[in-house]
Length: 208
Image 1 (cartoon, rainbow, N blue to C red):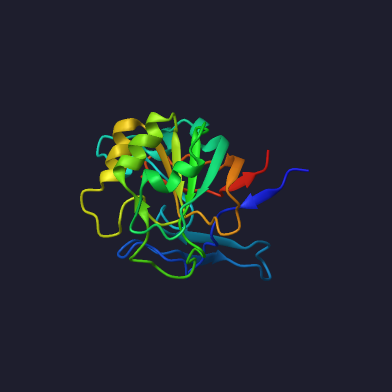
Image 2: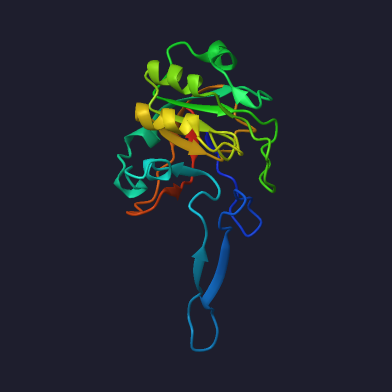
């Protein structure tokens, strides 16, 4: 029987966000009580909280919003590759041991334990040449278990710009702590947010 791996971190008021970004908050607009049969809440959050898909609009002023993106890259055969401790940048040599006959989606684990409860300034990111090599291999989506595919202090975002040039899609903030290296089916569909620069996803892996 296929196994399902939930690779999404919990989202709540304590979820870490990029410094200066909007944290998760929830308010109750209505609560069950005499005369009120339901609970109804409102949410305030950055679309980059938790596991999320970046849209081209995030790093390109002329880029598409997340609601306009084709869903196909976010669903289908995927490989998880371990590059644990390969900070500050994941290079092609860190992936080469598992890079033969790559499927269209590659997720990279860099943490021994992903910090779901704190921001990590020293997060691991992709070297831009790694993105280029993955694109050359036919990869259409890359994912990582950190908050960004570029270093936290980067101002020119070279890996995001490689993604833009090569037309790849990206998932960030995945939790791959318990996932062995190997091939899976990825399901991580973004919401149809027609003007947003990103979308939360409930990312899961399923064994073939």
